[in-house]
Image 1 (cartoon, rainbow, N blue to C red):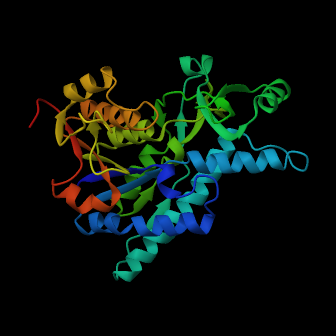
Image 2: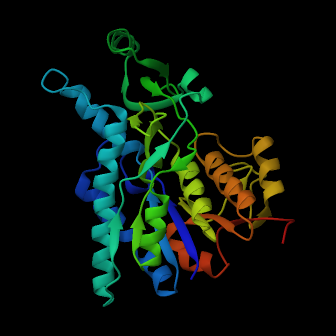
Length: 317
């Protein structure tokens, strides 16, 4: 049996970045899980990961609004909160879809920790925006009182920024492997994993940072020896020259071609570039594996090789 990691983005679970309710987010999850059960029925061992950017923003915004009543929520705890809540959504939706098909495959969400190095250069340049948009005056006041770093974000206002260090290992990898071997569908690496550092004695220490979900999913996929890393997105394929008269959809490309496109700036740094980079790094590090970026609703066609952008080792095929 082959293993696949399917990594959903947090934005894919919301249709209104400001006002989607939790029940609305669950309805979105429920609409996405059918193709995942198709994969299970085809014999895949399956890990589902998910982003959490908007959801962490919602938690931090609630925390800001309630700051005069309750203590603020640290970022690592906000990530943990979303792992539980979004993991619950996926477990419930997957179990319900399995029940509709008369299947009894177990499903479990694993609270997952991503180990980062406190020497990572990202801590010297916190660039990942989190939380709500603020006026410059308000952002600077909070930065002074709470020790935040802040930055103006795309002309929409000012936001808190935190570091986004690269993960070095996922603490629960061995447990996830055993669960997969026992036939369990696993939800893991939610939001990139809870960022933690390890002390010399093995003590786990939470870190005020966020880990990129796609990079963490690629790391987990590699360490599990997965045959496929699949990142569903809002388009059926990746394109170069996206939105221009020179737009070109990509079918199958090599690791070398993907890296050339990245170096030439063909992908939006805030959206498609990290996905392509994560898939490319996974394929380069995992002989025989394939990475695919495509639309969630086209997962059956992706598995049939008729949809999605595939990144493979070696030369173009």
